[in-house]
Length: 115
Image 1 (cartoon, rainbow, N blue to C red):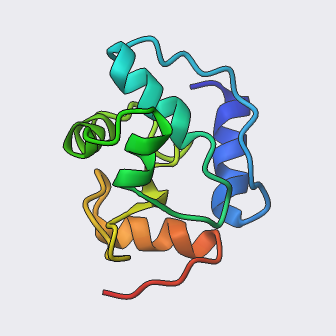
Image 2: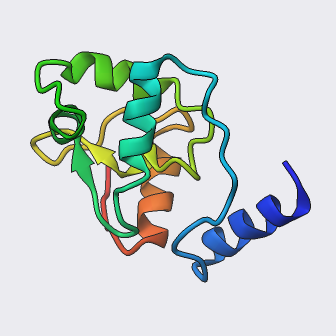
């Protein structure tokens, strides 16, 4: 990670940046994982989606569990915003950094949750 990347993440955490302008190389995953990660990048700041919506977005509506697996392997979890993914019923679900971190990231974006 270079200084520009770190600065953008610091700005995001401070609440002054809503989008990242980084040259992402997400070629490390499978084509399926890459399509999930690309779809995550389309979720706007301050909004959430559920796993089924991501599966629908990649034209594979029955792949909800596989979508969850791909999200769990996200290589850049703040920049590729997997914290914006919630359960279909609105519940908070797993996050590699822990649910408390997920709640804090969502709060930065104006989305309020409590455990």
